[in-house]
Image 1 (cartoon, rainbow, N blue to C red):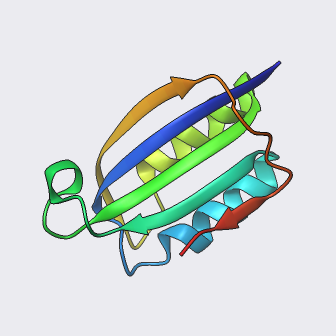
Image 2: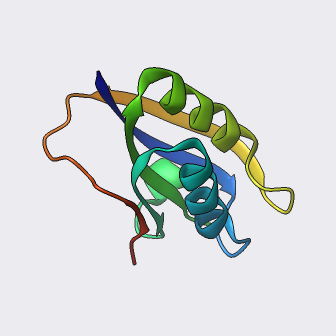
Length: 99
């Protein structure tokens, strides 16, 4: 059964290759969706911005990528991840980096 999660990732995650790393992890695990930098919501992410992602897939695979995103790539520092499970409104056929 298809599951979907929306994530707000906080910390030192902008300008460190976080989005590209996320896309690689998504491909390895086999989930679809998107990831993007967000700089216009200091109320959510703080002054430095953060990363937003929407991920779809089987629950086990979505859980797997959530655990990876909580750690991030070696050059990043994730200070927190807000997780919101949702009902899918559209089906993604790939994983992309949004601008």
